Amino acid sequence: MKNNYILIDFENVQPGNLDILNGHNFKLVVFVGANQKTVPYEFATALQKLGENADYRKISGNGSNALDFHIAFYIGEFAATDANAYFHIISRDKGFDPLIAHLRERGIFALRHKDISEIPLLRVASAKTLDEKIDAVVSSLKSRGAARPRKLKTLAGTVNALFKKTLDQAEQDAMTRELIRRGHVLVQDQSVSYGPSILGH
Figure 1: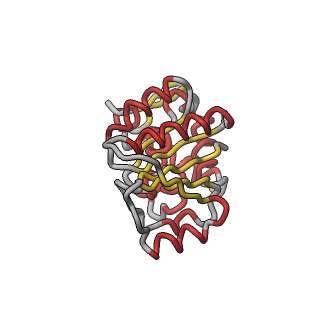
Figure 2: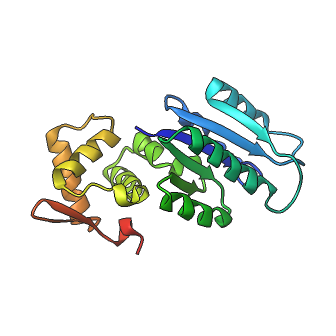
Figure 3: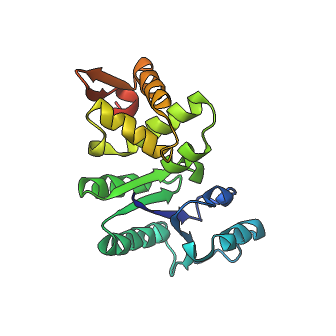
């Protein structure tokens, strides 16, 4: 299991759904701009409920990318001390994407999301309908890059692990069949490859 770090670009996104982090193991860091004088009461209260798993970083200095550089610095600092880290940048700013591509080339797991609810692990946890579960699995597989399962048995185990091993064999098989039926997964002689929805083509 990866150690998940959530880094919020608070100048760009002010999440109103921190409560979905309750019960999950995350390190949350909120980056606040030098000129941001206040934080909404509801957000501050929700952050306090996360206890020692949540923290603020008020950046120093101004500039169009000042906060972005602070986030990049802290990712480097965390990555240097935690080889098992998985970084989730919460921002609508596509300027983070080249950094994320570079991190992934270096074997460091990182993704950018527009909202906390898009984090694959949280999508799985909140999924109720079959469509939501399939979407959550696809999102998780998409985020894994080269670490995606290559064998059908491994895929079934990976799906079960996403749902905290609550799926019985029939449910695992049904989920795998649905992934194949929808074209997300291709199977030949027990070997697995992936469709455009996961590969991003």
